[in-house]
Amino acid sequence: MATESDFKCLRCGHWFKTNYEKNKPEERTCPKCGSNSVRPMPEKKK
Image: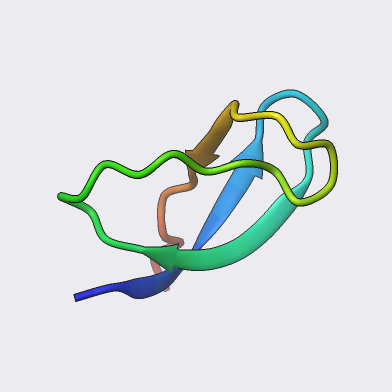
């Protein structure tokens, strides 16, 4: 099941939210610079 998660571009530092399925590999690109150096950021514990 896909959930909305935070992602960060390692090239330009842009943070954005997108749907993410943990066990499904998928190529993502940064909506700001177009780089594919995008990584999911860990969820913040409350």
